Length: 130
Image 1 (cartoon, rainbow, N blue to C red):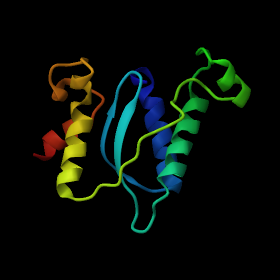
Image 2: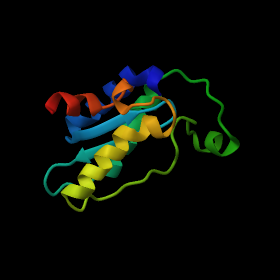
Image 3: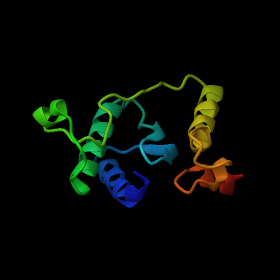
Image 4: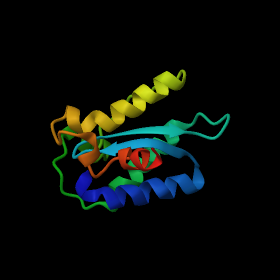
């Protein structure tokens, strides 16, 4: 996914135009990503946003990946997992823990020794903000 990060940004920005949200934290790895969003007050429709991001990204990148029979029958690409994990943030501490988890993910997966050296992360925005 990191080799297509500009395409991913394009897909996210397109969805944000119609369905606004703020990306509070993000990290993009080679085979998955983590994002923490804030949606507009009273809006809880994260599934539509995620579905559109995944669909737009899939349409914008070149085809050619292996697809198993189930994916072929459903016309699905093999880029994204069908499932995703969502969590409603409970309080400031829970928020901070999730931001830390997101930013530490490249270290957890052995890509880098320090989170700040991973290029595809909002950790740099947090560092600049102090």
